[in-house]
Length: 424
Ligand SMILES: *Cc1c(COP(=O)(O)O)cnc(C)c1O
Image: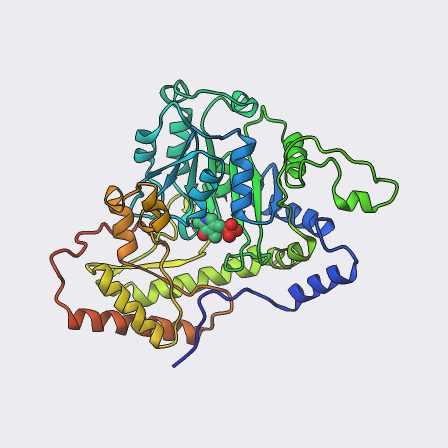
């Protein structure tokens, strides 16, 4: 029996030192630590700019509002994601148009194309588990003259872009690669989450990366967005604290969603060793899982790498061939009773009460349901020891074996699931 948590934060002495130094500096809200974290993110993702905020959710609301998304507009999202993806759209008064996914968990580009109407303002593609969506296909769609011809530009920013905005929900995918570059380079706007369970954390937090087309003035957009996170105020508290700077103005109805320095300090210490230490350690765990399961005939690997993409190894979403949702639930119970915390990513939104009340139905998203029903997310983080990984692999294998021994595979089970795209 072991006691293996699902996703504890990575807190080493460097993180503690950075936080303590912030406390001793007498400046704890948005200031130099946030600026330093933004610089590290720009460096890591080669983005044109990075704006830290207090969560992924508030960052998404901000960017939809920035683009002028409002009541009557539509934003296309996958049915298979964490609810924040769709809730951010609802917070702007717009309608999330849910579409189905592919067998790699990511939004189906074909379904996206079919869902586009003259009301479509944006697409939010979600890099589930850290696996980048097919951004080449999505970019081809939003730039296709047949699709740009449908676009109705209503706001100032919409007139500048003059097409659908591509937003990446990169809550999982800090460090993911597309054609050798950061996957963030593939979207107009990429939003990371620094929630406690993510690859890099600030306890709560998020970051918006801008890679808008060149006819946008990114430096000006950064200034405007920074102001937007601070009530539309011309001066932040830090500049006001410098003395002689008491005068300020409120230019528009902003939000109050800035990241405090005390939080940024945690992420700053982590991100400094992310590409050299933390991400390679996550990858090692994923590859050990892959090795441990690859000979099981029931194993469907999560997508980790292909010719042009590499995951950020945020989750290890294991899938089991030919099982029902109930059997999956029982396997989870057995794994949990052996002291291993696992999860399911995700319960498709159309299965949740609120979205059902809005009229979404899971029958409309068969692939989302299939993936959900046979999925179990295993613990994956740098601190996992080899012994723990072996224990998890053995625990999962025996729980699955027990299920198959106790149950004949029912006719309703998922059959002929295509093998995941994976190559080493
Ligand atoms: C965690 C998560 C979010 C929300 O992030 P917050 O920072 O908690 O707002 C959004 N989308 C996905 C896919 C997530 O996993």
